[in-house]
Amino acid sequence: MSVEGESMPASRLVGAYLTEAKLESTRLLRTPAFVVPTLLFPLLFYALFGLVIFSRSGDPVAAAILFTNYCAFGAMAPGIFGFGITLAMEREQGVLLLKRALPMPPGAHLIAKMLMAALFVAIVVASLCAAGIIFGHVQLRTSQYLAIALTSVFGVLPFCAIGFLIGTLATGQSAPAIANLVYLPMSFLSGIWVPLSVLPNALQSVAPIWPTYHLIHLMRGVADLPHSGSVMTHFIVLLGVTVGFTLFAIRRLARAG
Amino acid sequence: MPQEVLAELIGVHKHYAKTVALAGLDLTVHRGELLALLGPNGAGKSTAISILLGLQNPTRGTANLFGVSPQLVRARRHIGVMMQEVVLPAMLKVRELIELVSSYYSEPLPLDQVIELTGISRIAQRHYGKLSGGQKRQAQFALAVCGRPELLFLDEPTVGLDIDARTAMWRTVRELMAQKCSVVLTTHYLEEAEALADRVAVLAKGRLVASGSMREILAFVDRRSIRCVSRLTATEVSSWDYVQSALLEDGQLCIITTHADHILRRMMMADESMHDVEVRRAGLAEAFAHLTQEGDE
View 1 (tube, each protein chain N blue to C red):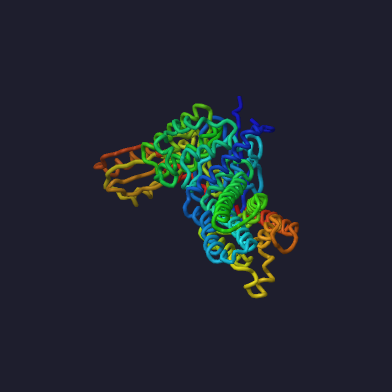
View 2 (cartoon, each protein chain N blue to C red; view 1 turned 90 degrees about the vertical axis):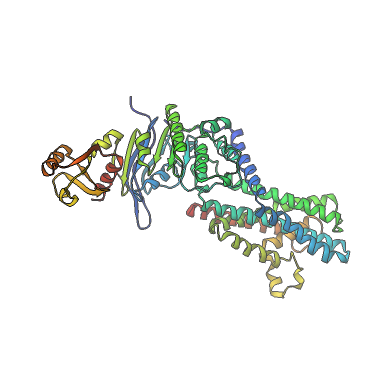
């Protein structure tokens, strides 16, 4: 017998991608070790650095910039950790192999992780918006909030790509450490926690190598806040990081499994 | 009428950097049969299966699954897979895992029917991570059958199962076969192969060393085992013609031979006090040991 030319109805195919995404999100929402750092840390850090320490200045522009910084911070973890660590574990534990032997539609597990990361970022940004409006003296127009929120959700892509590569390189045990080695220095060196101006000159000048730096200035740009560089440049850099890391990871996955 | 071929390997070689896993393997799976794939560790069973599942490419030769390359998703929509040593997401319920795997297929079984068929109603609502080893195997079996497969790959399916669960799984496999589902089974439990298989393929060193019906395989290695209490020593008997091996086990002399009648006559002449004699056809375990030994030579 032959299955030449057979195909699955489009509705069932879309259903398979959506089921994969729904259950990937479900299982991570049930995992406290993931939910707490991803959903609560950005809010806690924003409360600590943004609201308690810096908001005393009362400067509405400074308040808005802090708010965008923590939105960018919130966009990092779901991709780097949610994509990277789960992929490394699945490779190690044979789930990936089983899914490849089963008729899983191509890339469904990867697209599912991306949608999961976007969902988590949407939740984080919603919580940051609430905190910024209620406690943070953030005075932005609805269109600015929307621009920042949408950019954050787009901003999940480069970090998913970085997580994807970590997931293909690391073992399940080493993935959390590697993810932290990327996540923490990148947050610090791109000026999320402390203004770049207080860092040594050498570190300031290399800040543009970090994707987070571009995400922050892209957000400020689209929300009409003071920013450096052009919006288009930041967009292209982030797109380049996404495409580059994804291609590298796909090649690595095809080789190493 | 020629039998319909569902999956086949034709002259498949698989070389890794330093080792040869498969050295020209031919293997065919027909509709409605259960093929047991046997062989010692390192014989190439896992490599053969992973090529049939499209997980690896052969170095040379051809693999077909439903007439096309196993790498095509549309070929794999007709198969179900149960692998060894898979750790599924702990935080998903068994029911949700079935929902996920079912979504990959065009016409899966309804969820409740999968649960009933595989007898897992008691664990369907539980998180996978909370299950015992045996229950996890049962859940994985449900995932293998939920897509109404025409060909089922079962790799050591009953490891860690108690006798009741094992018998239940065998019953389900037979039910599926009655509905024309084919099965490729790899197992270390030879009684499992004896209980289920229509056909056996024995691999050693990346080659097929024997293939045929269970009866043919047993006849091919037509050996009898003799057990008795005797004054004769194992060393003495093992030097006789036609004796493949002789051992003393729990005070009984155990002999494997190709000519049981001849050996029995000779033993009775040498030792009149010989008693508690038991003669039986050597099982698959003995046949298997013999076949793979020949593969070594």
